[in-house]
Length: 297
Image (cartoon, rainbow, N blue to C red; front, top):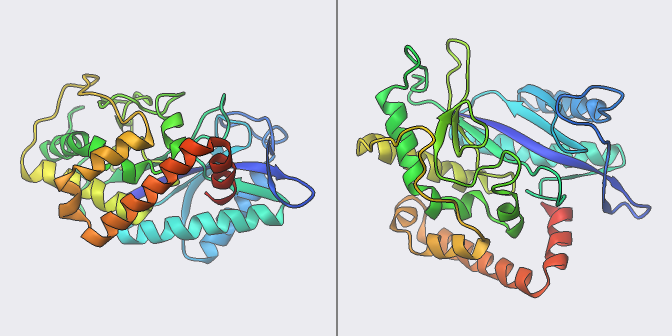
């Protein structure tokens, strides 16, 4: 079971209907009307999703100006990925009806927070992240250890754009490979939760990722940790850092035998080829790539 939290920016459109870098509002975290001008947009998005059978759990204004978040109920991995794709199309469509442009670019504004795609999981109908006396189950510990052990080599599939690496390490986006209870700046976070709602959050993925590939790799890493009884490092200890750039992430993915055990060979080869093209275009003209991704991601 996976629960997703999607964040997105709402930008004003110019006279030609193209996206600008002027946010819809200047509100902050959990602000309400009149500061939060996205309430009606989010409401229409949520109502439309409900009519499509996709049930939002909550929605609110995020830290950045024009930045919004909508969270979803748990679903099976495939259904969660399907819902993610439908969600992004719905957000763009509803935003356009309001004369706005929605962007899922991981870091659209240099001095404001970027946004992630937080994942929460359980196993076999049993919530392995339900704590007993403040302690994680062994399955939960091994699952987290498996993810931490594979995170560098799978980062290309969780953070697929140059903008992805501009986000990591800023505001509450993680940079170091670690975990903790409650701390929002760690890679894996175990948030406080009422009984029956225990979960983990993986805080590095961003909304530009392909959810089918991302979910497959994260779940495979978690299951590897459980199967191999991988020991979990102490909270706040770190075992390195996430990739610094798209180029580094590509290099790590190319060398990964784990990825080739999880994903089809032709998918991996096509994905790597496309990411190398993206990296080369960004090196040649970073601004042009940024503008293209702002409009399309």
